[in-house]
Image (cartoon, rainbow, N blue to C red):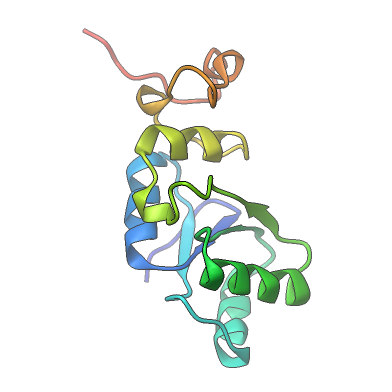
Length: 137
C-alpha cells in the first residue's frame, strides 16, 4: 500500500488517465480509478479511501464521464470537478502541456517544463515559487 502525504485525491476513469496525470504531476496525490463505471459498492469503496481529503473529479468528456460526474455530484457534493476540452475526448489523450495547465489552475504542483504558452497558459502563475522550476545547466 502506497502512503500519500497530500490531502488531495484525484478520481479518474481508467489506468491510461492515471498514467497521463502521473506524467504531469510532481506532488504525491492519491489517484483512484473508477474503471469507467460507478455503483453503490464502488462508491462505498472510494469513500472509505478518502479520509477527509480534498476530492477532485477528472473524468472524460463522454457519456461515461458525465455519468460518473453525476454520481459524485449527487453523493459527494463537496468534490471539485475538473473539466477537459471535449475535443480531446479522454483525459488519457490530452496533451501533457494542456493537462498541466488544467491541473495547475486547480492548485496542483505540475512540472512547469510542460506548461504551454498561449490560450491555456497561466504565465503569472509560472513565475510563482510554488511550482517546480526545472534545473537548467
